[in-house]
Length: 167
Image (cartoon, rainbow, N blue to C red; front, side, top):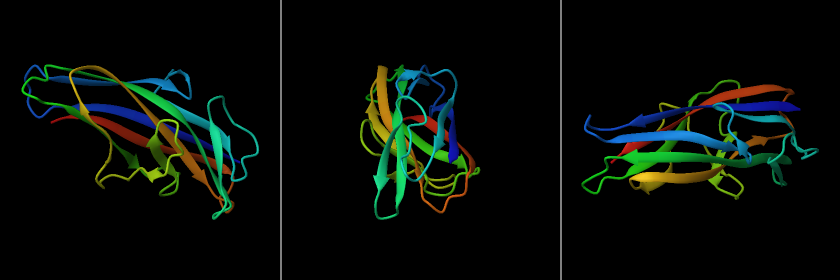
């Protein structure tokens, strides 16, 4: 069994110091209110033996004899002062490898098996949402951890930076 944890950091970036502001808040993790900037998957395995936490789903991957454990996360993005047709986009990248192997932390649309690996900085981040207008916007995504039979038991950790970029 592996215990997987993804720690999050939210960053808002504006190209000018005008009255523009962008704020990102992690609202929900696996259907429950977010208590911290972390996503504790719990004990996961390559055989989908038992759900480690409420709201976490397992999808077997027959070609690798592994599994992807995933659940829904929800953010609230708030943008103010976005005059002149400016919008905001949400991007993400793993800040460092940590103990989680490359291409094992995955992203996808909400409610869908995540298949896109989070890149590791300094690689370009993945774009999770574009065209976020002024006001408050709810953004839901699927986040997952891929496990294969050759993985040794232990704890995986990694960090992800989610950024709002004013365009």
